Amino acid sequence: MSDAGQRSDRAVSSSRETVRRLLKMIDMIARIDGWLGALCLTTLCLLMIAGIVVRTFSTVISWFPKDIPIAWEYSSYLMAVTFTFGAALTLRAGGHIRVRLLLSNSSPIVVRILELIVTVIALVFAVFFSTAMARFAWRAYISDERSLASSTPLWIPESLVAFGAVLLALQLVARLGQLLINEPPEDKSIIY
Image 1 (cartoon, helix red, strand yellow):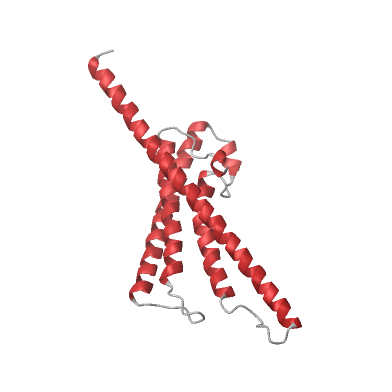
Image 2 (tube, rainbow, N blue to C red):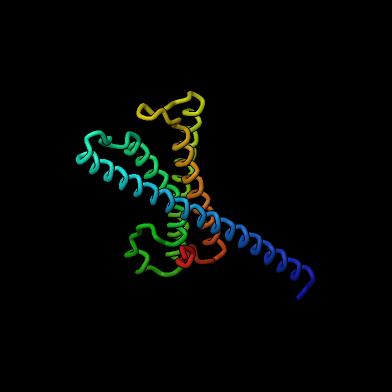
């Protein structure tokens, strides 16, 4: 093999290794993101249970409050954050709902082309959603918007949703990279 050919092979190998390291870092971020989503879901469940307990005690003890005033508001924030924080890890683990009928009856090259097209379309939507949520949070921050129920600054939950959307977009970029270098875009072992 010529010297130029060896240099070219080393450059390609080095590029692939750089891409693999970047993809591994995105996987690590997705794991952390997933754990944060699980923490939000756990907090949401605990808040709902606390609301039920408070309501139950209020029927027995007359002076006990009938509810937790922020429970519904914070539950909605936690639900939105849970959805966006869990989206990146779910994508990497192959947990999103898909119609496999077309994929199972197609050749590998057709499947790859379809995966690339769908990933690009999803990336466009994720970037749009991320940008819209970031602008939404920024406007809430600038105008100091607050919720009516608890006076919570709305930029806080909105920026968390935007952050989760950005991480989904990042995971879609990683998926596109994996498809382009012929690596499997899904890894079920990532959730363990």
